[in-house]
Length: 157
Image (cartoon, rainbow, N blue to C red; front, side, top):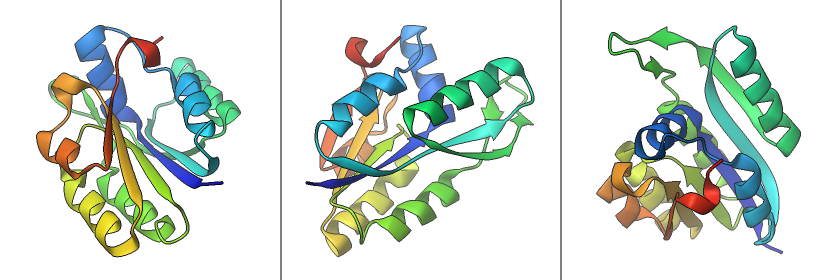
């Protein structure tokens, strides 16, 4: 059975699905789909810490599904969006587990991860799959992925 690790860039997925579809991503549906492909040995959701009930309920729902939650302090940008600065943390975690799994799944559209995916594919022979909103996923990330999965109707709430 294939060993799979999932890494969710929560802020990226939240803002891209909201912008493209005005809907939320369905993490439970993703979990169901991926668990049919092998054993999920690690699943981490990277988010920002806000002390509001809605955010805490969402994080509890992710924990219930099976995700470990990693939080950073909330930083408000002048445009109203929030920043969690998780790129380096996600990269470190993916590098650390890549030797132990068959597949890494990244939920993000951020092109900064293209070098990381190329490295783990080449150095560790790991399949590097990406889930992202088609219109808001960097082409370089799509090209770096072993398989690119479009976030569309079937993965939205």
